[in-house]
Length: 448
Image (tube, rainbow, N blue to C red; front, side, top):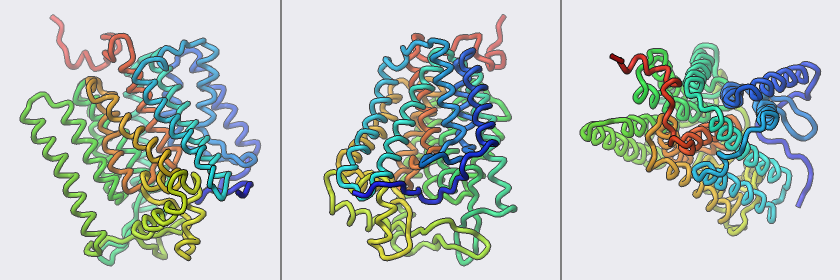
């Protein structure tokens, strides 16, 4: 077992300086004070700062705006003496347990890890995810202002989309070769095109659910349409399928007529079937789409095809089938096995969990995926619950092709949505919003 820092792939953060200290201090003060006055401010801060990391290294770790906001939110909630009733409620407790089980299974993978530092990094990451879920659930349970949440999701998604689409003309960091033609893949402030697609796959269902259940708002419709365009321009095959599935499921659960549900349900099944057939054709070498670098499109890090990466994952797992090779160790071992300058993950959450954490981590991962959907199945009657169910179900499909929760921006956003939706169900009124908080009520009801 080798001890010492291992730099994660594709991360180059400058050492923190006076400017970083000033920015972090200001963010901490603002979020802590705002949270102490209104707990919902903690959720808003995490929503807005999650996509914009502002990485700064200190020692062997990396600071981000979202980490500072999370610490400040905890400070604000503690100062206000917010009770932890939300964490005792079944929906929140069940999800929190599922996330913590992954953290435990990740830590156990150190038993056969060649490099211990990545195991520590991944364990702390999942611990952070659990804290994000707990903070958001606690804050929303105490201060359930859906007006703020709805506007927050709308504005931050609009900003992300506005920063992403111009990359078509300003230059993207990766691309595809489609029928011998290079095509840029936009990513915006996210780490890559797949992460952008997954991020929008979380945010767009929230806006669609509010639009269908609480009243139409043209800004939301415009951002939803723009987000769909941005997802298409990311050329994330898994992301496109997941977004289509998430939006169809959202519409399905919001539909009132059985005919509409039948059409939407059939469309969702058709998306899954079509994606499976298309993937089989591409995997069989019949498709025309291949990932490739180009002199005008910069590709970061050593990448490989999923076929090679998945085969390598299975071979590495066979060496340690029970406990795995250690969390975060796959990217350090795959290049040796393939005898190529490749340093990346397995491009599948399920395979990554199996190879790095063996049976315990795969079981914990499957339990979280199941819980993220099952928690809301019987009570998907509010926009947040509907969005969480639809987005999580779609993510379970996207996870087959991409390791999305490896990236804190993506994993953190999923935890925010799960925390909000679980707290919404846990509230004494079962997630129903008080009339005075329904800013759309005036447009949907006429009082005589």
